[in-house]
Image 1 (tube, rainbow, N blue to C red):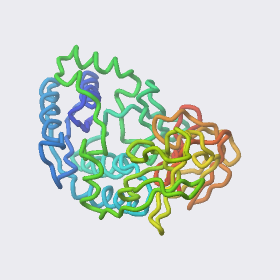
Image 2 (image 1 turned 180 degrees about the vertical axis):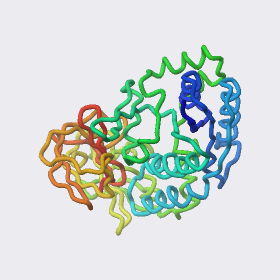
Image 3 (image 1 turned 45 degrees about the horizontal axis):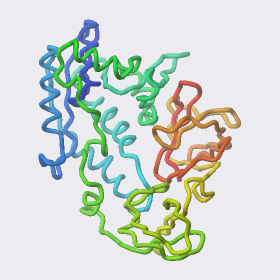
Length: 357
């Protein structure tokens, strides 16, 4: 049996991952990661409660729980990039970097030093060995699949990783937890930025990047229709929080963010969800990462997502090299956002992807 260290967050998924591995006869240790310290107050950060929940779960399962602090690594590898991207007017996805740099790099390195054969997490994804390579596969529960956030993992990382709940549906995971007497069986799923919890986003960002208010203009008429608080607070396709009231001569349709002019500090908006300015049928992505270590074929039918929770969209890779790839979609995609990730799939296998430019 293997020596496996499970990343335990205090949530139900990682607790059940540990439970299943213990039941399978493995030598299991839990490890709780503390990755944020800047303002770890009771009000927003759930990490103290999460640690209590992880400790209680480990106790019920009958395993030891270690606590490790990766806040320095998180700040250097994830948070610094997060701020740089926002300052450049893009919308990053810190969960992607957090997985590749913290959970499957800092945590994996730490676990291997402790003598682990493998690590495990509560992610909804699966690993398959096929023709001598490790593949990242979608989870059985399509509504919970997290392969989108894991696309930057490489062969070494996948070869050392287990996803024990990847073949289960969420309701089955909660039932297993309840039957085992785990107190967190009904705990709600965490949301918010990876490890930063539920803080009010604008206030949080304003502590690190100065606010620069400016004009909101209608793209079609160039009329000023409102004021923005700072371009960093808005993302393409955003509808809420624009503060645009009734505009004389404009139809009663909702406004959406369609572009940012960083040089002039102008936020551009359009009316109507399907406005042409919100639709794109191709994109270029950089900072590429391919799970097999090999680039995908060009002019081959794949599927891709440009945001999590989006249905797979048919596409082909028109060109790809070490620096960038260009992807063309069969149908226009809504609000393709620079800084977010495009992730490419072949059937159920996640091939990798890159950061949208």
